[in-house]
Length: 115
Image (tube, rainbow, N blue to C red; front, side, top):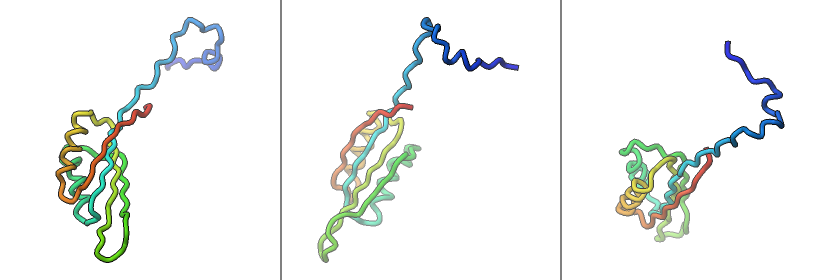
């Protein structure tokens, strides 16, 4: 049976020689902000670029914005986040997204989240 440390071992003030606890490693989250025409086929075409690489976005949010006036097109704003995506792959996906039919703008950023 394994021995468990006692409560006093966790709070012992005489343990000044103990090494500091390691800092949590930060995970990179690659973020895509996409502006496109509000058409039904845009979202599947965007998602396909991730799916064919075996990536599942950890966050997907989309909104249809713009005027509802006749004759004026509406816009689709999509925010996608993928954890653990390296910069080279993220940049490549962004270039591919810019070539998708009806996608107007693709912006990218990265954030680092403590694990």
